[in-house]
Amino acid sequence: MKSLVIDGLEDYCRAHTSPLPELYERLREQTYAEVAAPQMQVGHLEGRLLKLLAQLAGARLAVEVGTFTGYSALSIAEGLAPDGHLHTFDIDPVATGIARRYWDEADWARDRITLHLGDARAELAAFVARIDRPVDLAFIDADKSGYIDYWETLVPAMRPGGLIVVDNVLWSGRVLTPADPNDHHIVAFNRHAAADARVEQVMLTVRDGLMIARRRE
Ligand SMILES: C[S@@+](CC[C@H](N)C(=O)[O-])C[C@H]1O[C@@H](n2cnc3c(N)ncnc32)[C@H](O)[C@@H]1O
Image (cartoon, rainbow, N blue to C red; front, top):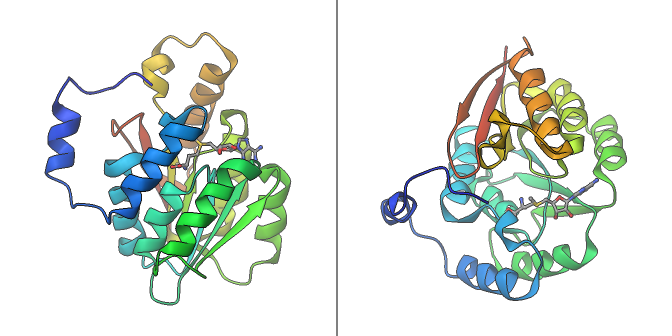
């Protein structure tokens, strides 16, 4: 992933952001040692932002699409309300096997994260159909071809004032000159979300680009 900020600034931002429990560093090291495409992990800055957003949203019900080795789920779980719970969706049993081990270690995550293993297109829709309260915080970070589907499933399920956070919306800058199918999926998603009157949103140059949308009242 190409950095969107000039050399050194990312380190500077990390140095001026709240530190992490040591568990995250071990999870980062294991992910980089054992798993393909480890750069998919959100990392320190975006992880702290997700925790903060979960806190600001007073999240009692949070949803994540794209668990991987569990870093972002751990971060969201840290910011949940005391009776909050995170439901996270992924198709990969190997990466999520690592995630489960770290969640079990963390007091704030153990028993507060439910993993739904399978294709999120079907699993997420089935989950939303059976919940009995609205979603306070959602994080979309899975296959780019599914972004519009995940968005369309989640927006009606959100509490008015609830937040949807979407990762990789700048796609290493390739949104400016889209060439391959994933480039076009991201461009189509960004256009779709920007035209959605049910939300107000801001697109930020954090890491690989982040959209934060708030469901209107
Ligand atoms: C960018 S990674 C998620 C990174 C994670 N949020 C983190 O911070 O560690 C994307 C994840 O989406 C998952 N994924 C891809 N297609 C999927 C699908 N159709 N259903 C569910 N998960 C999918 C992949 O297995 C991968 O773990």
